[in-house]
Image: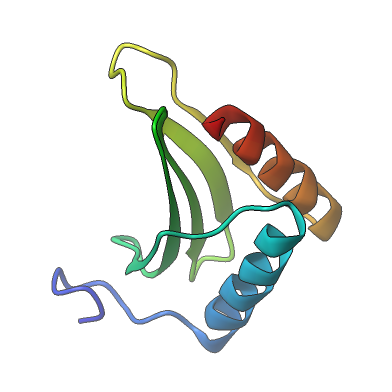
Length: 100
């Protein structure tokens, strides 16, 4: 019961991947404001900004999502599925740009 809602704890590779993302975030000048349990079993990294918040969700299923949820609930939500280290850095650069 990882998050109090019955979700499974993150697998070891999820924790390792989260650590890699945190290091990669530093290379694109992003800093996580929170690290949370994922409702789907895994780890969520959150990034606060005046325009809303960004997230990286690393799931036990092996799927990683990067996205932005705007403060204005009428604005479009953006997210992408990350498939490789190269696309991870590109997604984080896009995340940073969308949070500015």
